[in-house]
Image 1 (cartoon, rainbow, N blue to C red):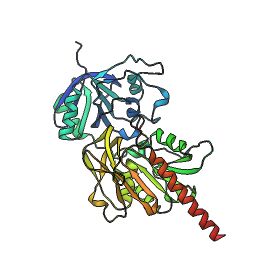
Image 2: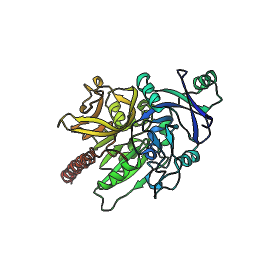
Image 3: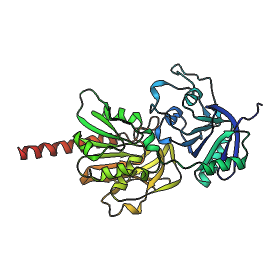
Length: 372
């Protein structure tokens, strides 16, 4: 058995020894876990994991490598990756590099060989905490000092949002959509394109005047990392756009829409991450298996009086999973209907968005005729 060369130290003083892969560097992150059985490439390239050390509960990671076209973002901003068994010899005719190579190229440390079952139970029981990924020679007291002296970063969205406007067009488009990029997954853009939408992606801090100047049929607010209250620019823009066009938010976008209507959010004990969360549509009673990735949730009691209605509920912990304001043609979900990978139970929500845009376009046509 070879000697350990890497360890993690949690802020409560516990440590786990293992072996290094990816970049040979230190990092201080928030530790979280993901219960997905596949999709590690999509997870490490999902901007929502910025500054987070992800523990994969499924033990074998790396076995199918990395494939260029399967990434969810050009930016790889996950804080670190923690796994039980790492395979550095992928068996997949499509693979172009190993997971370790991807992490190394982007300066992201990985550690394998630890008891991830014990670590996941610790996160579940005690909650998410800060963690140091470091060399095996680092003592616990030294590691705790490094954690305590490393400030918590609040700039995650600004780090992963687009720096300038870009376009994703489709053949024979029926709709024009502006997407506010707070750290958007590429499969969301693909799903909007498949729904007949030309998409104009704008940075998170784009003003409401600039959004209106594009004259879109609808506004999409994307997923992204961190605390929704860290991006007041988006909240203020949304407040001024209520009722002016259909709006659809996913994950962080759901939380930002809620805040813009006056609801409140709070941090969950350990968040929801994985492709196996049951969610119920309150109106129909239908239960969807959903893919999730978030640390914050909308406070149920704070929704009352905002004009929003709760449309979906998480059956595991009864948290808010969907909101809607029919008269404004606004709705949002906490989970990821585009998945990638994950269950496809919720793709109907993109049809709901296009239905709202059809209504809006007809209304604009009628108003235009009356003003002619």
